[in-house]
Length: 299
Image (cartoon, rainbow, N blue to C red; front, top):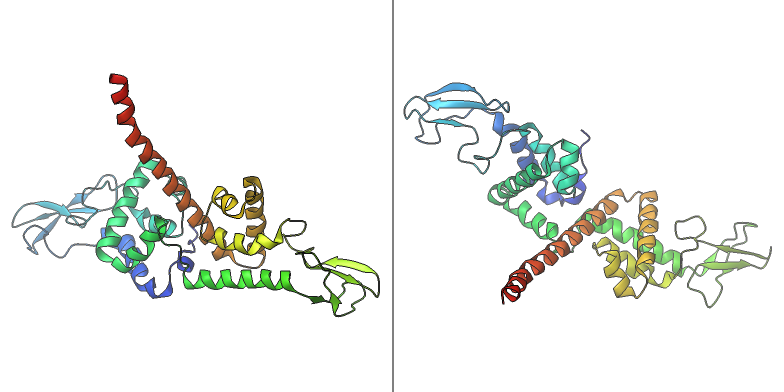
């Protein structure tokens, strides 16, 4: 499978922990244990391969207890099916993919993907705490700050957009006359050339051509990158939800055209996490109200 761009989301100072965790998931289950996890004896014998995976079972010749490489770890009681996919599962999860999308990509059930997600989360928390601390608060949409690369791309995009909207002089594309002045009383970069009597707009060759309310675009870009939904943004900017949805597609296309694929990957991840958190809150509220409704019915 193609390697996801998880490196672009995770800060560079966390890459050593990230590499170590992925190496663990790729190789550790298939390594031979050096001693018995029950008594510490080094006298071991092979006890056959697990029928649902490539993991080897062992038996201690001193305490006669059976075990495998995962005994005593957070994966000890998990099923061994798809074990060779655990590393790919973590890569996709760290790339911002959801449980359902991962289950389809890797050919496993949604229930199985959910269980593996919890196991890998436990592993990350126990052995790679810095990576876990950074990832979990963003996975739960509790921290909206961007990683360095994503912040750089966001700043580049917003600076380009701001410069474009605030440009006061431009060169005529028809006769090449420089220093054409921007038309007054407009938020758009609209210019008029008096030499050839031509009007032109700097947005014509961008995804923002004929898009309304340019005075709101910079605020929209900030909210979009932080993962706010169309409904959230429409409420904050006082625009229609359908317009917010239309803008999102325009902004994403423009970001991709400028080579900001990682920024797009980030905002899609955060938007999914925002949606997931709000859905969870709705279910929790319904669960709290259910006992009250049942109590009222019993009366």
